[in-house]
Image (cartoon, rainbow, N blue to C red; front, side, top):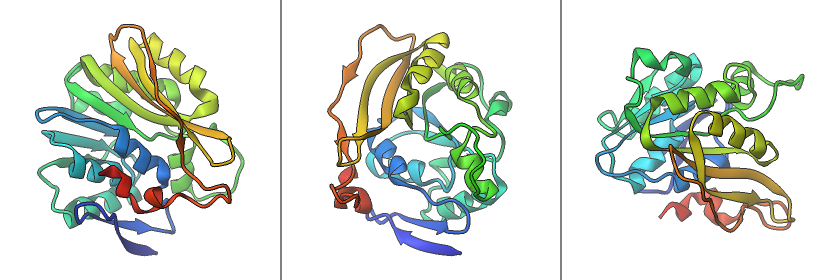
Length: 236
């Protein structure tokens, strides 16, 4: 079932389909972390409903974001959301597997790549296929994601990602193999001291040295999301 939501940020709105996959606080956190400059071109890998790229239009000046989305149902939703917010000139949806990116982009041609990718290993949990592809590495393995991101990026380009904290070592190793150096990171914390996610910025060909930011607490002690994460107001 589709529902219209106010993103409470510069008048932006989003259509979500509760029968498919709805975005979580991961998307809002990543949108707040990604930084774009006026003349930069960016790529989002796995755009879903388009919420991250749409939120980025409220806080960044940039030339263009190209959004790769493999799932037809999510492609249709993303198209609706781009049109709803009159963002056709800023956001371009590419309805294809990101592993085919060389049909659309030259190697080393992109300033920024960002992704809230599937970060769970494949499981036997019961869920619909759309949600499984969004959450689990069914169609995009970690090494494939990093191969694509590194291949697209210019030397000095930036890669932003939100990922499962327990897989941080895997993420760093995969990135280092493709000349992506960790430069900035923080963890999210659930309000009870447990760390859930890592949010990170890598530079292609970057020098060593990592800035570790304070943990972002996302929940109250009773488990409820903090108000700024629920309303997206912390985007500024």
